[in-house]
Image 1 (cartoon, one colour):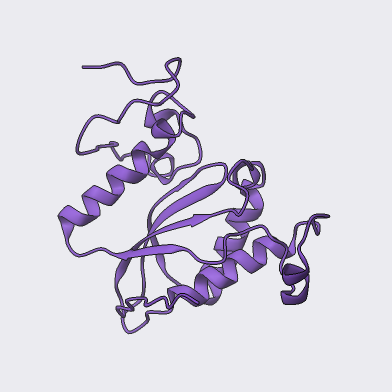
Image 2: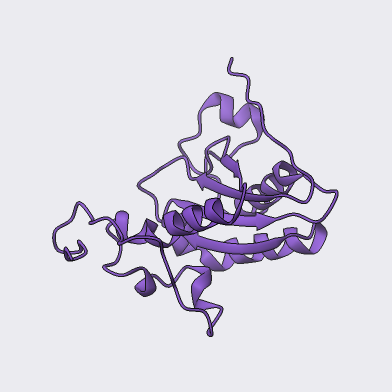
Length: 177
């Protein structure tokens, strides 16, 4: 069995990638209201700041800053994932292991996190987030993607560190400059 070692930095800023088990699903965008409610409930019980977020159909990326002296991002993700899952019907295709563990088979068991080291690292991960909908072939321009935090800050200008890579879909791909 794999041994996962997480770096817990109290009051740290983290980049996260969280995925659904079924990468072809559109559950996160189809049930965006439920996801927002799960995050809101978690933030009410265990506060943290969301510095940036982008929700794709089957994965999400977020940058969080935790309160001083607090490093429990794992507990927060557990709360968000379980609250979201609890309000969905039980799928018919659960394995015996998933049933025994009380899982619904919606989320991948783990998530990926990275401690943001400095402003350059923050800018790099923000760039990865803002270009994610373009790279996934969902939109031509990052500003066209509706499920992102940059729509909530009306005064903000969306900046990235480089041109977004072209999508594999030529109909959506960003034009070469």
